[in-house]
Image 1 (tube, helix red, strand yellow):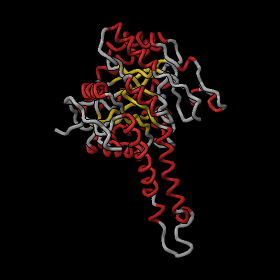
Image 2 (cartoon, protein in one colour; image 1 turned 90 degrees about the vertical axis):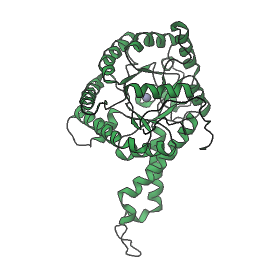
Image 3 (cartoon, rainbow, N blue to C red; image 1 turned 135 degrees about the horizontal axis):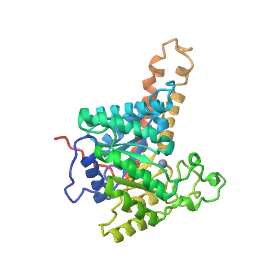
Image 4 (tube, rainbow, N blue to C red; image 1 turned 180 degrees about the vertical axis):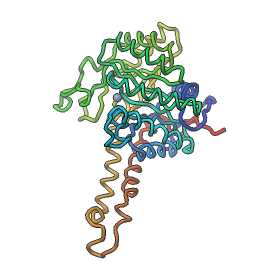
Length: 371
Ligand SMILES: [Zn+2]
């Protein structure tokens, strides 16, 4: 698996290991476009999952996107802080500081990103922008590489207006913005309830109109570093085969329309693939060839972590019911030690990501280089 990545034929610019922003973020996006590969964007909600993601990146000599949702950030901060929004800001800040400190030692470049923020979560993003401003003053770098704004359920004009306001705050700090056009389906999104009853989900709201991509790109890309999650039938979560109709040609058509109208080179837009878990390899590869640089994965890596832990517990059952072995009387602490079963989860999580790096063509492509 590790040997299939072709050596890049052109000299690729490098960035220092660690979290990218501003010019280094642009350089990484450009390397993905020119190299024809994408990075997994893995959701984390704890230091153990963040470390498993970093370990997988280092092992695969690949760069990575580490992202956190508002719910994940809330979890990261602990379960008992009474102010929900404050906990979400603190949790995402804590993760960002954790990754900033460690990433450079793992020797890879990391895009640090926040996942879906709808209108009620704009206060969360504003709080993080403040944290980035503080971090920039202290270190010369913002906390996050990019944020996501998901107003895909609102009219295009409202989506663009809000994105333009947010880009006005992010650009001076060297932070990029990801927007969503057309909706990603899935249970948590209230679209695709029929996914369970065996009929394919071809809801028209799941497919972006290339004209909308052109309008958004024309209006927003001059304001800062923009990426677009254009939906092409993708769904959050994993469903039975045949229940999802992916139409990656929508991505190709969007790129072609923008390239033609705005006279750019091929694949001008950095595209994002949401709901990557459970997707077929051919559709993934096609999407990457149409300019997807970021491939979101959450459900599959969560399942992998759970499988690793479950396997460990099944093999050490006695230690999860007794402190001393009822048979031999020996202490079982070495088996129920929290580190042992988390390690098993981390290993399995990293292995799932290795498959992902492979399919996305990212193995061996890290552009991080210590000076
Ligand atoms: Zn998503």
